[in-house]
Image (cartoon, rainbow, N blue to C red; front, top):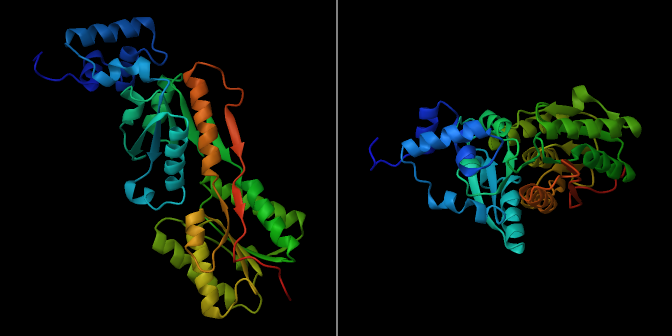
Length: 343
């Protein structure tokens, strides 16, 4: 072995015939690696003249003070996102208020690589936002004791938003404003949030005996590219408002779709909110960038991050969590697209 060459964890993993995550756990004293495996990995590392970096050496002192946030999506979809940007800003603010050092890593969920924050020893625990990749799930299976809390995804420890209840309440609110005819713009049911919004909407329609005609007054959009999503909603809106009878209230499971519905209504001369009320699942920034500003249900980022950091600190300290899964109610904000139905 060339002593001038820097030995990396992958080199040790290849030599020992184990995963990089196993090497990291064995060398850093984390995870549930057996004593025999730990000794075997450390012996291989010593034979290869491995020298841990300063971050790894300081791991034990830093573990209770440094927290990580993994943002699992493509960078071009993160910046400007009504989900990820509030997540990042709330994480930074909460860490600062608690005098905790924080680190943020962007991770492509399609990548087979394990995010650095899980294996480099720089974070004592990690919050994870976005899709959990197979590589991350495998790491968690091999290291079940690593402090890890997922946001809006299924995991051993996680925080989920109750969109079903939130949109049930949104329809209930509109019903109290004398709306009886409802339309729905939703997305793919493989996404938990979309399933929940639709379930809450349909429950309210059934309980309040509302007029909902799914074949005429609803559409399911792919919810992929921004322009395509808005265009799809515009096209649906044009058909909707050309009918002799159309809903007095439309629920949109996406803020981009709400913009399309508002545009189509404007084209058709349908006045908002006098003739049409619109309610959307949308961040504050997105809802207030439209005209009129959109009444919305939004992910409660400050509450989710506050509770998530508390869960992480509890796990880092080795204490059991009484609630491994926490349900958070999203925030409802009434703006300019909702009003009492007249007629």
